[in-house]
Image (tube, rainbow, N blue to C red; front, top):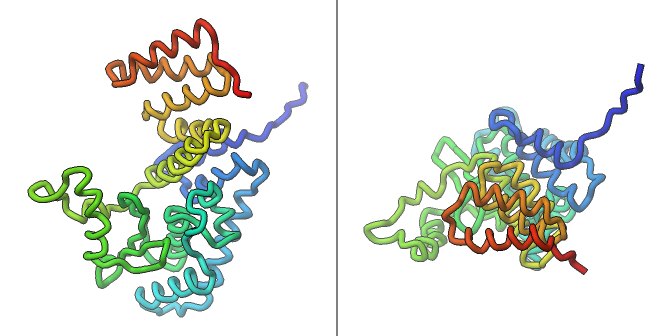
Length: 288
């Protein structure tokens, strides 16, 4: 009988199992393992256990018969005051703000990672909390007996309708959504689905790496985005361009051809067909 060697799944394969099915989508764990691109040995289960420990400490302090408002006040004091979680105003675009393990260690993050931690603690405390993919700034909303409460995880502030309208005004103006065409505020406050939350986290990282010209890290994030959003042709295109920059013409051509087959009339189709032709003839120059 032959010896069977069992190999551990790759980080990307592990990620793929977490996001394969919307019904069993493991949002928190999938968000944690994004950091494995920088820290391959990161133990996701240990990070989950740390979060559970923070939640357990809070739950022990809150009476079983506490009202929803009492629970919310206890959570806000614990999360923002005692634990000291806050937005990283000094280095907002540091990639580590997108890694939950780093945010737990430093108590500093960006709205989406702070929201992920806050909503997990809220849920374990018996509150109904969801992330909101608000334009420009990820928010949290909680369903309370008195109505919805919207919180900015970056500052810990509760936001009034007037606050939200003021934050939304530049977006509405930019997209012509004011006057007769004004979109109701409620449409911007719908709970984000887990796949949407994770794609926003990854696209934040994508922009950070693109701006820095960090092609290896950009490729790693695009690998995850293609797995997460298999129908998103633009992510496949961008991965193809990253493959080309890193000197992998075969992989680049394969991705760009998929994009062109799905978007034959795209504005960039002609340029990309030329790029594919060049890659086939000359290959991709390697970076030095």
